[in-house]
Amino acid sequence: QVQLVESGGGLVQPGESLRLSCTGSGFTLDYHNIGWFRQPPGKEREGVGCISNSDGSTYYVESVRGRFTISRDNAKNTVYLQMNNLKREDTAIYYCAATVPRLLTMDPKAYDYWGQGTQVTVSS
Image 1 (cartoon, rainbow, N blue to C red):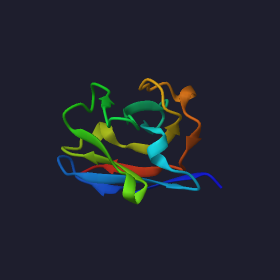
Image 2 (cartoon, rainbow, N blue to C red):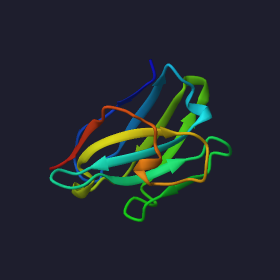
Image 3 (cartoon, rainbow, N blue to C red):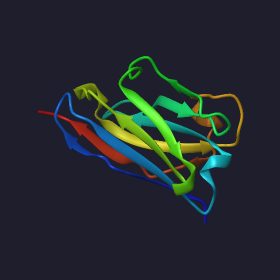
Image 4 (cartoon, rainbow, N blue to C red):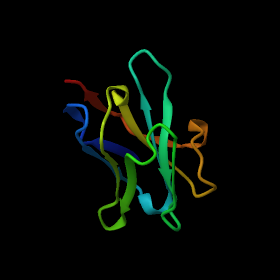
């Protein structure tokens, strides 16, 4: 059974860091581009960033650029989202998703597999 599982969410204060993990079960993540998305409370789902399966190139949306970093450990079949200097507006459910290799995109319709999400809350 193909499955993506996110972990690492939690409650942090503004300015702190968290690292989310996305682990594949039933398929190999390094054959796929991986995207991170989030859904803030009461809002639509939005893209955060993505990483290529081929050369590890990444793309980030402007609101997180310079604070968030996506990386992958193919030996562990895991992709990470390192989030630094978190802000209250980063509060959301965070999802990872996988798509077959193609140009990097944040269009959620391009992604075939989705995790169940992990809650990140930034509050003092």
